Amino acid sequence: MKLQVLPKLIIHGGAGSSLHGKGGVEVVRRSLYKVIEEVYSLLLSRASAKEAVVRACQMLEDDPRFNAGTGSVLQSDGQIRMSASLMDGTTQSFSGVINVSRVKNPIDLAKALQTSPDRVLSDYGAAELARELQIPSYNALTDLRLQEWIQERQQNFKHTMASVVAEPELAEPELVETSNARRGTIGVVALDTQGRLVAGTSTGGKGFERIGRVSDSAMPAGNYATIHAAVSCTGIGEDIIDECLAAKIVVRVTDGMSLKDAMKRSFAEAHQNKRDFGAIALDASGAIAWGKTSQVLLAAFHDGEKIGDTLELPVGTEVGCIDN
Ligand code: GLY
Image (tube, rainbow, N blue to C red; front, side, top):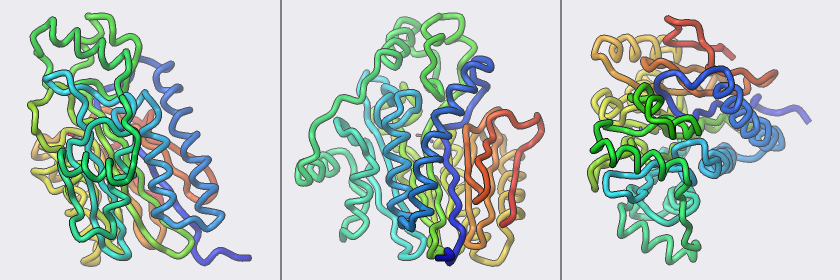
């Protein structure tokens, strides 16, 4: 039977400065493609965009390489606190959790809150929800992230954030030195066979931040959707909030601008304001777009025919768009 709409999928595993060489790029590419392959098949078999986004977020949260779920960075006090959100463009419903600890998949809590009268819960409330849902307690800490924190502690937290992906080489002090200004998040945007758009984003935060700092990932600045477009952001949360990036791009498309123009304009503004972030997007026509002001954006997509990625874009490529 012919599909009503050809599904589209784009995911990201963070943005920041370059990975450590070709080896690092290939490992990240394999991780991202695995998610794209499984989740695009789900979309082809008529899974809803929401099911697809939640599944892709779970897979990325479970991959210790990325800064979300397992492998989340540690905050200044050595604790992991994660944030995640889900936005359904059809119902225009945003839900999320802020600074939740000891759960495997924060996106599951965001999903559970989609139909709740209280749709964004922070630390204590999110922990209560996890208990109510009988979600087992889980330790998201990995040795690499612990090493990274211990090293930072020895250097008196001179970096203001952790690295975008966990790479073993980071255990060497000189590499930590050059790896400053790299940050991670995971995000997914899907268009399903019914033409529904959904965005999901999940993060361990910047790393080494003050207790109580709130990430953009559980705000409409970092994750937003309508029936017209959907966007997930990654990068420095404060920059994303200052630009209100996801909502700005989506509202521009909702008001009639093409996705390509909305991305170009939003990233031109971001460039002018010296922001450091990236974003992935889809619109209802099936156009796929990405943008970045950071050195790299770790994104991959399925355009209905093939898989592509943004891991090795030529210098100066800040915005890309594939029309439907
Ligand atoms: N964009 C993730 C964060 O800054 O927390």
